[in-house]
Length: 282
Ligand code: GLN
Image 1 (spheres, rainbow, N blue to C red):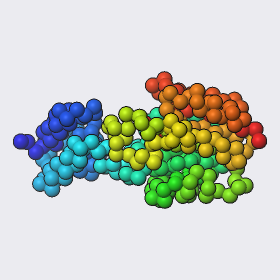
Image 2 (image 1 turned 45 degrees about the horizontal axis):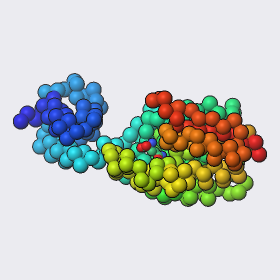
Image 3 (image 1 turned 90 degrees about the vertical axis):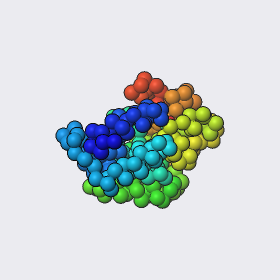
Image 4 (image 1 turned 180 degrees about the horizontal axis):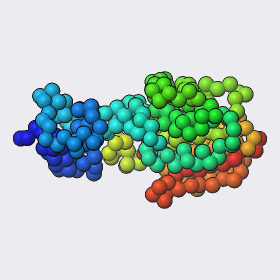
């Protein structure tokens, strides 16, 4: 068997394809780059370069992990979101491209000038750091129930030199004082029904259930965030939440019953209902 970059790459792609992976090319390339500690361009520039014994062993080890279904983002410990390289860990959800839609919509709702923004269930800090990097004049607070997640988000903040974000640990709004108010509150909360068969497939099998699953058909946390959000939104402030593609109507109803105005749902890049928002006139 050839130990060149090109040979290893082809072999790994075939192994992943035979195992039923739906992204064998990209997975093999990302894993090999991780082992070699080189950018993707290196694989194309040096296809004949041979791996040494340690690199071969390391590549075999990460391939074995991938073949058990472990997400590539957990194996390499990193995932890009909003062009920001973020560290990820098994106690955080892996940031999804569709969540960038929530960032875009939140940026549209942000008033001009300095203001405060809250990201609930921040995980890696992805949403909070994307917003803070786009708008250096705002201050973003990210909260996560798990102290390890808040610490990881803080590490990502420091690595990216983003000064206008801070991370706290606790359940939803609990680390805040009663008086704290925000112009925009965003959240990608757990919203999957515990019975959803999709929890047994692909990457989500390895992600923390606490970041994915909520009671009451996946709506329990959205309900709490919406209810208590009224205490923490400025008058005219916006609440925006990501949710499942079949939950748009239910989330609009939650917001309307609680007295939010201008309630609407926006679609993700696949055209599916994904983010519902409402304005609070306190
Ligand atoms: N969108 C994710 C999925 O369906 C779930 C994210 C979440 O629960 N917040 O895999």
